[in-house]
Image 1 (cartoon, rainbow, N blue to C red):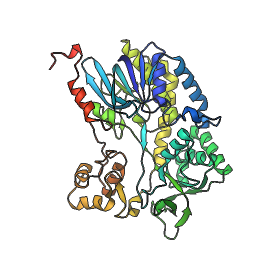
Image 2: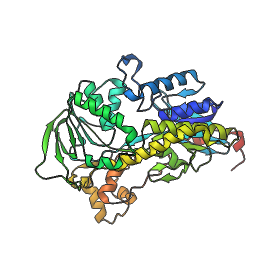
Image 3: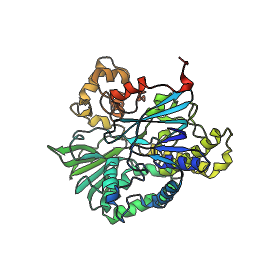
Image 4: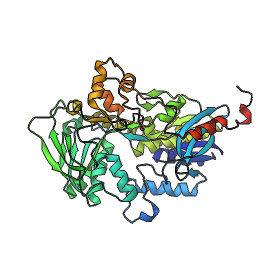
Length: 462
């Protein structure tokens, strides 16, 4: 099918962009891998599981209701259960390639004049002894289980790591009846005042989480970290310890917390696979964009976590700006930034807060010291930390060489999960991989792409 704008990702940024463009007469197709729009922040349970106790965060319920109702009343073509694996530049625009169907193996295409990448982000989890035990899940995974299926990872849980995601996960689990044995945060609270100005807008939200932690009697262990997880067939407990001012474990501070589940996370990274395959310039680990959310590739915009981790409010502002910019550009007009001035102010505030949170919630500087040589680092290929360290003695000086010598990052996730850990263990600079496909694709689908007839505008071009 053909459309004016293909929006990839139906989270806050994608929804805001799709609605902003559609209101200005642009034909929009909204594509998402999930069964329903909303993304992780507005994740919805299956229809048969709906109750009056919504799992959308309290401060976002009104926003979600507004977005949901506006989407239902709009002409936006919503295509869920579509897993995008590639965006191809062609002479007459861009083609979005996706997989759909009951088994996710049926090809689908959307041809568009413009594409917005609202692909979100993914969690970073740094390894520690025992982190592969059943019962250990990511913080975002625990949140997704709770929001999407009203399922909890266990009757007693520890929430650990660093980052603002830990607060809603801990309070959400506690509200669902889980006994949260502790919220273990490696950040030192004395660092907070230096970022108070940029985070002033976040204080009411943080105060609300603090009140709920007190109500559910969740102990908060600041400047602590998980040292190891215990168990044979599944998790039975975790050992935590205090950190000194330099991020090292303080001697004689270890304590055992019995638990059935550990929800752990160490921040997030932007999803840039599609942007990388299109050749979009990256700014560090995020997609680089201008004031209109345009990338340096003609016809491609990006918004939300793909351009930098910053939360739902920032994603909504960036998506709105992108949608209005796209609508003007597709009509052959230069957009007037004054038209989205409120969103631009929200974007500036959101980016300042995101920068402060990123500086505040850094993993312990010496976390790798506690990773034993037999600790699995790459779960897909079962590569232990010892093999990664040995690669250095064999002459590896960059992540690509480490990957070739150890196979770390060559499995199903293609390094998304293990690359930050491998970089830290080896001291190599973290560099985003540029992959031709964003996810595995059946060979039959690729063969069909090669054999398909080209559009008339492409005939005779090669």
